[in-house]
Image 1 (cartoon, rainbow, N blue to C red):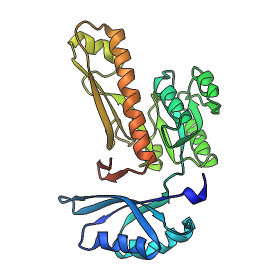
Image 2 (image 1 turned 180 degrees about the vertical axis):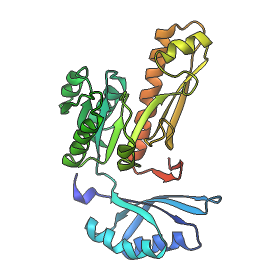
Image 3 (image 1 turned 180 degrees about the horizontal axis):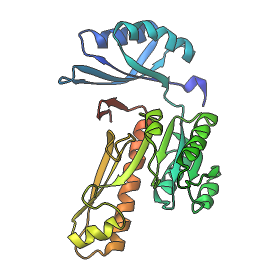
Image 4 (image 1 turned 135 degrees about the vertical axis):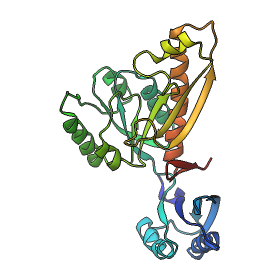
Length: 287
């Protein structure tokens, strides 16, 4: 990435009060900045303000650390939780999988053509099934078995890779293991999971066969941040596709795979572009 092409994204949330937009835009202008795009939202019920602003320097590129230091007084004055980074910097991502490869394949392909602003540093799996796929994209593959009674060791290896590879985001791309409560806390706001829309109606094995038996007409998927409450984290993206009586369970499975890949890639893209802000058990998603 050329430093001359760098632009910057500031995201923040704080208690709502008059003058916030003026304070932030003035701070940018005072540093020779030009706002390219700005989106804001006020949650009136919670009394909180959310903002994403994309800006550039009209002269020389900023020193990022100095720019962050300069924003601290504004953030402190308004009790802001905030982040400031280079918009073009790819989101360093670790993908965790088991045996199903449709979501992994989609993420690897979209990364390879520049459709997602991510850089997949490694693929981690409790099986070796998808090693060949990962290596076909020149992405390192790590087989980390999850042995009964030794989940802590597997998670320790995962966190070692997160630290070693400077990972920003962990994606559970059909990783069929439940993370511990401690792991969920450590990854709060930076781990995304994908699951089908049948929960809680069709739990356990063969959910698409259960759906076929019940004559389901809509199949969907949900991408959300990982929390200790299984499959109940803050939702980032959802979608559905129609199915009919003429489709057998195998066709429903394929339809489910298609919608899962779409939803997960959108969620990862939104996170990578710093368009998702946590709002308690919900999210604010700026398009």
